[in-house]
Amino acid sequence: MGKTIRVAAAGDIHAGSAERDRVAEAFKRVEEQADVILLAGDLTQRGQVDEIDVVADACSGLQVPVVAVLGNHDWQSDRPGDLARALAEAGVVVLDRTHTILPLNGVSVGVAGVKGFVGGFGNQWANFGEPLFREAYAETTKDVDGLDRSLASIEPCAVRLALLHYSPVEATLIGEPERLWLVLGADRLAGPIRQHRPDLVVHGHAHHGSFEGDIDGVPVYNVAVHVMGREFWVFELDAERRTTAPPLAVEET
Ligand SMILES: [Fe+2]
Ligand SMILES: [Fe+2]
Image: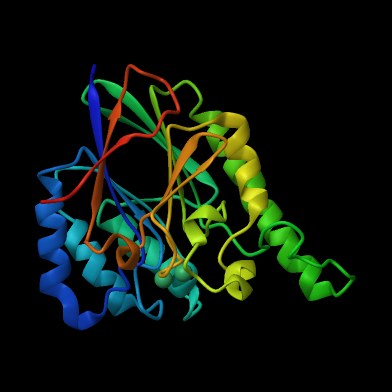
């Protein structure tokens, strides 16, 4: 193995204001084991600023970069801008249909991030004229296009990561009732992943889903803390391999 990049990931932390110490300690612990930390949305319970401050405070002062997307619960109080600002002030890179490129250990690591949205899998979505349904479809289209653009932008990077909240694949939803899959992800999000083939895709949102899946061999992990049964998972990626074989998943100790 050549140069290794350690990617710690977690989704659905759902921090409450009473969990300040627990959250801060989890970030402190994982900092020792990671070169970058990815947060896959639903950082809060109800999208409140005092909740995001728990995560922001845990991130400020860390020596490793933190990259995040927001989740649906972070929008619940209609203050996503305030939440993103609080995270940014703590040094967190918040992505929303955008990308970032980080130099880590002499390796360029690109992260493409979108929240994603609903739509389901197969023919779950019925587009039959209702303006609000068309609006929802168009919203997912913006995420698909944003993911496509962002993955294209990180194409030259040695390590390419895709960070979502909603799932791009059914495999990591198994365990959730099928009637909910419509609102747990969208197969249209898999299009850009299939085309650009990042080294690792992580998402959250499906608390009762499955940890591991793939999109035509591109590894996809549901890193919701409920699924992982731990606060973070650390993936080790070989920066010189440039392949889409599944990364080595290392348990946090
Ligand atoms: Fe969640
Ligand atoms: Fe969610």
